[in-house]
Length: 393
Figure 1 (tube, rainbow, N blue to C red):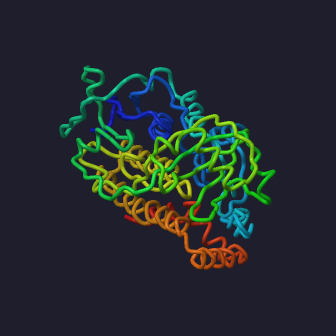
Figure 2 (tube, one colour):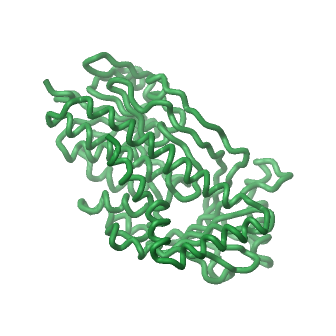
Figure 3 (spheres, rainbow, N blue to C red):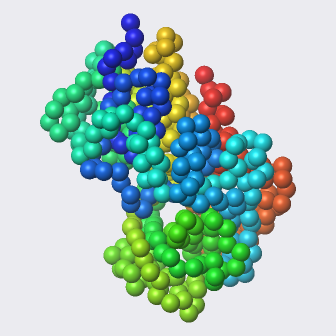
């Protein structure tokens, strides 16, 4: 008796994680249905960093080359002190023996979603389809979509922080919310003409705070934080964003602001990733600081791992193999994604000049030593986490 058979794997959530899972399963010939509450692929200010192993995963089918054409290859990234221009710069070329893509790619996550959607059979993804309930029996699952009951073999929650599948599993979302808000904005302002020696990705200490600059093909993505006496509403006005830019680049003109959004950052991991025929992946399973760009990538790696196991079980492997998914991916979320992102945040949030100097000196020593740099970048680029997960049985 097959585990999936002709009954579809139901994926709740049609973002990059849900679509990645759907694509892997469809490639293997498994039936899939994806339900997405939005009426189209969301193209808001969301993830934009693709790490080397993620690019490796999508390489064989042409998706990687497609998003490379729409993104910006970023061979180096840096941490710097604004006032002195001192910086530690990491060159991902040292990973050439570990990956086919020894660089970061800066590209809007919607470009990946569009590339996958174009490769899925028509009708696989249903937009404007809110899932209202999820239940299961020993033999299958039922989801209620806009009031209609739809049955399947497995349900996977790729439905974000408020996941209905996580609630159905009964998992807690353990962790906390960071006190600060983060403001993202995009602009065509040429920061490279005003700050010497920028990389494509830059984490920058300024007096009393921090900001980051990530280069997309046609604009910069700026990450800022409200001032100590500002409300969120005040901090997200165009005037406030422009004033923050002038504070780091004196005399800067009023920058154009193409997009902006504010969000709170969490560090949370679900207490379980599986219950029977229901699973979690991506933001439904773990949330972390965006410092280091590990959230979307980690979710895609979840999808890859779960797809491998579902395909193997449908091919005749013992269904107990599916228990390995939680052991592998939850461990990585705790130790390699949330913990590392939290460490990145803590390092950048220090305001003490001596602590900043110590961090920078340590990072420069690592960056200047090819052996140490490779070890550091294997971890920050998520290669080590994937390798470690594979060793968990």
